[in-house]
Length: 191
Picture: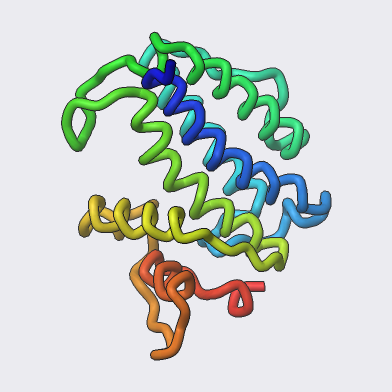
């Protein structure tokens, strides 16, 4: 039987697996390279992803803390954090925990998959770009980014979210156009 926590865990795992695969590809020196996120290194981006998920869960009474910090060992910190989230999201009491969010009534699981899932996808690219890796989104991810950006509306360009959109060549592929909407240039432009 498939319940809400099973679906949440599956959806989170799909996003986290691809994020973790990029984390594992970085060499130690890559963590100090500048990312497309202004004033952030690849390590800073990873710290943001981990700390915002932890903070969100803590606000709802769930402890996602781990023993390893991103500053000390980015790879180990990501994998410990990811393992902890999988344990939490497998629990129906966590995944189905309801709260009133900015966009209305929702659940912790839905927020992890949608709002924080957006971060897992976009920041996966940011970390890869910092290391000079060519990371591609699949169609499902591109659909999710577009849908999320549409849902954020003008808040997409609030301070600390995304920089204003940048122009792209007329023949740019879908990923390049979507990254440009998020204020990012293609990997070739940032590496």
